[in-house]
Image (cartoon, rainbow, N blue to C red):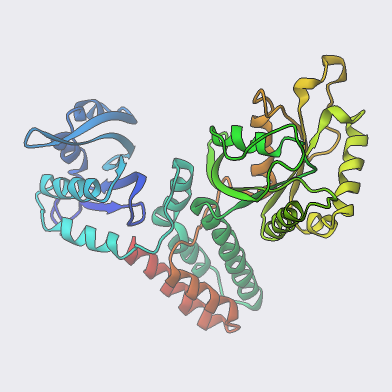
Length: 393
């Protein structure tokens, strides 16, 4: 029968890299006592509070201020700052508190072996990736193995595998900040003003003079709605119009080239120049087709943004008539929350993903599962997937 010490485990749930947040899981009969021994506020946690602030100290020196989360009996997490040195120090003192200092080396070696995983920039991103450690492919494979093999069963798991790969790749893009949003519209519509207020500082020169933005500029911004917070690359483009200015024409051409790779397009127009929402929508679509954007709008999510609502009286204030229409004032900062909410919705950001795939080895196994058309071979792959997750996590 294993000893009490043997039953204790430590795992670093977040990827091996510096980040804002790191999470260290500890399980076993000595988990609560170990946390209590290294945390100055551990007593609060022992009183069964689900979340407690604490300070990890060793020999009187503070390592980090942390949040201790109780997940259940003999199961807790330490949410700490994501510096590599902090993680290594907390794992080391935890292992010592459990009476098994050698455990730290094994835990940290396993953690470093996962250096190719995406970094969770936000708590939302971490929660999504952490599902891979608490269940993920291992749980999915176990559920599928419990079913009797058949032709229909094989088709189902192949379809599931394809969905998980696609959804997980999308999740990886959202967490890593690889999503690109393009601001497009006629001159002087307020594209650069929106970019500036989104960033919180001046990204582009703004002026009432059309053609001020001479070149596209790309910066990282945050999209936030509810519990979701994600990074994206914002591309500000020169105002699109017919012009004889060679430099401005080149800026417009380069800006439109950038739109090709965008995941979301924001069509920015001056809302004060249009009579009502329906008319506004028709004018915007006609403008997009005129400038060669019609095909791109058919294949890419887009939002029609009516800017400069601060110039409208209350009586003239427009109400959106389509699901992808929003009104803002870049100068006053109004309407941005709704813009963020709609952008996240149209981008298809997964609020929940039960079985995320975060490891390259798991991806290869799922691709083999998709290609395999023999039920027994598929069962063997599922067994490998289940053991792979269990071994790694």
